[in-house]
Length: 343
Ligand code: AMP
Ligand code: MG
Picture 1: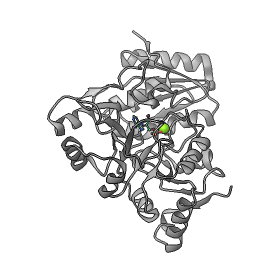
Picture 2: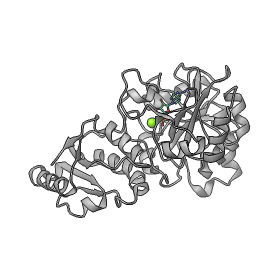
Picture 3: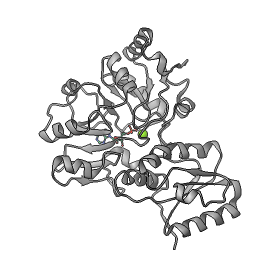
Picture 4: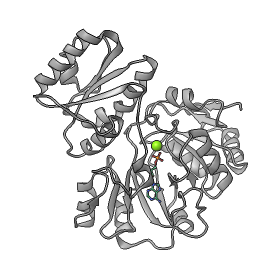
């Protein structure tokens, strides 16, 4: 398949808008940027189009897709009831990186909900994402634009590598500003439950609802609440060794590994650690005091590992406060939940 690539400057053209609409009307796929990660979108009400997403990504059929909207009135077609709690969260966080899980209407195909009776919905803040949903005139179901199991794409170059030739259109929107997927909050439970942490944190949600909420994302569950919880994620080809302990000890262990393993190993670390490393493949994620920057660089660094054929990737744990909880959630998954304590 020939993939058309559009740049930012193409987005205002009438012919681009017509092409976007034509592709979605005909059951095709469009990769578009959002503020969290890139998404691969199809008409949310077209099961055959949604199935293409699963095929292209190699995504397990029971892992549901998030529906992206650009107007609140679209919610009516997706869910029957919008509780007062939902309204308060929508008011506070939409458009933005919070996905809300509702009871679905009959119109929402079960193909996109992994056979569940619920539907996950998000109103992205990214202007290109809003423009695309606006011109195609239908909500788009869109998971992250990566091959299943790999880190989500936060750069156009990474999307292109994974998906060129497999989708109809890819829109180059530069680097995703947040860089981690949205927070997923299940509103069908009482109290609501976080299924995936993101940059909208538990504390931020609790402040709006003025009550404590549950967090099911902390521990791996035998019967996962959200299908996505049970699959391997964010896994480069190499193994990740996730170190926890005093900073100097972590630096010592990493420098020893650099001496022993040479250029087969890499180090993905906060600036305060990386500036003291002697290894060849050192990736500086940003200062420990700037977790938003660390979040935005994490998937880029993880994806670079495969390009360099790295066999062992040394990383360190982060504080779980605020967005740190989302960073650690992705890191623990990438490392297969193994943490190596150094002291
Ligand atoms: P992705 O689009 O690749 O970022 O993944 C979407 C995430 O949202 C996955 O972890 C899904 O399991 C989760 N999700 C989507 N729809 C639902 C739903 N109806 N109920 C629970 N989790 C959902
Ligand atoms: Mg994903």
